[in-house]
Image (cartoon, rainbow, N blue to C red):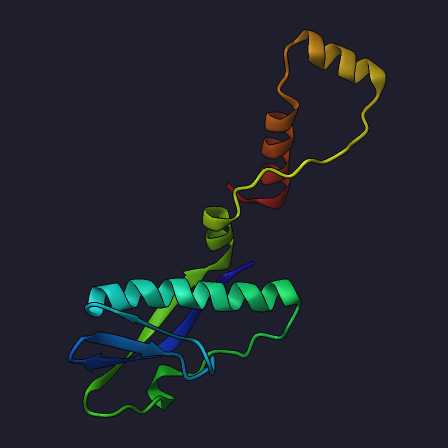
Length: 131
């Protein structure tokens, strides 16, 4: 999971704004206005790239914004997303893990009323450098 920045083409239409990504054929979204379109584009891009990550598919590098041409009623802008943050928002289900620790450590931790799940989460976040 990573942070990404890709160019997007925003087309102004009578009923809002349409968004497409030249580097992501098939990745489209829209919004009621420009601000909504940019917000929706961030979400669409994160979902699209997260799906590639999950499938282990290669992610095409982003084109240079200067190389993207557009029509008169369109603008080119950069959209950024963070697939780790995206997963944090949408994948909050608890997952049960079975693990083994020495009996003496279990005894001491239980006597100290340690919350094993909380300690494991904190340790994993520290080990992986995520918050």
